[in-house]
Structure formats: C-alpha cells, structure tokens
Image 1 (cartoon, rainbow, N blue to C red):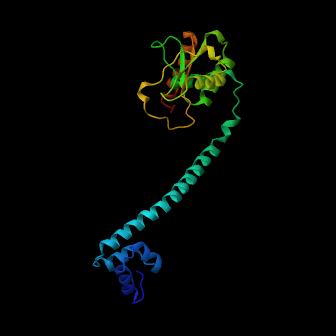
Image 2 (cartoon, one colour):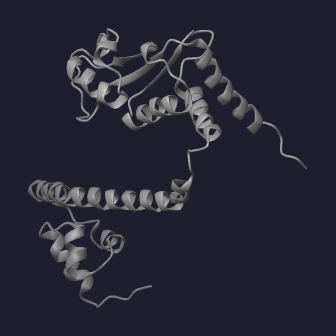
Image 3 (cartoon, rainbow, N blue to C red):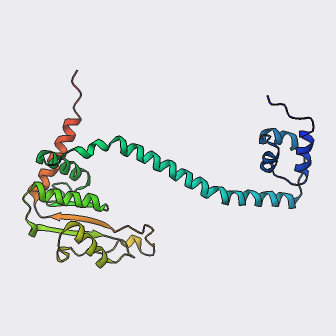
Length: 233
C-alpha cells in the first residue's frame, strides 16, 4: 500500500475545492483516482465547476479519440501482416496442374455460384474484382470455353453509374460490353448514398452451359463430402 506525504490529502482537497477534476489532480500529484475519490468525495462542486470539468472531459476525448483510433489501426495492421506472413508459403503453389486449378474453381463455385437444378447455367457473382478475375481466367485456362456463350451482369446501387460499371467489369472479365445483360439498380438503395467510394457493384459471370455448371458444382461437393468423412483410426 502506497504511503503519501502528510499534506498530500490536504493539497488534493484544496485542488478539488477549486474545481479541478480527478484526472487533473492525478496528473499533478501522481495519485490514483481511486485514492483521490475517497479523499474528496464529500466536497461539493458548484454548477460552474461541474460544467468546467464536463467540458474538460469532452475536450480530452476529442484529443484522445483520434490517437486511440490511429493506435488501433496500427495494431490491426500488424495483426493482418503477421497472418499474411504465416501463409505466404502458399504463393509457391503452382496452378499449372489442371486438377488443382479445377479444384479451386469447384470450391469457389460451390460457395458463390448458382446451383443446379434451380439454375440451368453457370452463374457466379462477387463484388471483389480479384475473385471475378481469377474465376473467369481459370475457366478459360482449364476448360474449352465458347466465348459466344459468356455474358456478365451487374448488381448495383441506385446512385451508381451503370455505364461506368459496365466499362469497369468488361475490362476485368475481358467480356465485351455488348455482352453485358440489362440490369436495374437495387430499388432498396434509392435515397441511400453509396458510402464505399471504391464499391463497383456485384459482377455476375454467366455462361450458358449446364454441363460445366454441374461439373464445377460436383467438384466442390465431392471435396466437401470427402472432408466430412471421419478420420482413420
């Protein structure tokens, strides 16, 4: 238990009676707020003093909040970097093997694609251009794609420019703009501004071939089914 000088309590009470906050007294005298609270709890503050202390707390919050946010962002960034470094060895995996490439496509389609028989053609949508780019490039790499059967559509918000989005996703997918299906904005977003500046809507890859659709779906289902089997003892 810390022992304070004999006059510490008197000095703390004097500062409190002048309208100092517990935080200010703590900074001045290096005495914990819990101890100070016990020493000065019977001292009544005027409305003017209470108002000053309240404003002091608000002002301190305005200064401290941005610092706390910045510190938290740095902490999150460090956390993300540590995880990225721990999985960096996956960069060395070669996708030259068609079986591995098709397996990734199948898992991706099982997660993001429309399933047979509710849909009778390949249909996969996502807002991440990297995922869309990987998927369409993988289809062209591992399968004999008939480009005439390829289309894309866009899901977008009310305040977004459809022509701009069409140009953007056409470049990502390498599918001509003329093959973009007619799309309408999401009516639920009317009057609600898009907050994410880089949000380019949802691109949906469409390929009119039920055989390829069901093959990708079956690959994903086969992998999942195998992973659900109990381990050998």
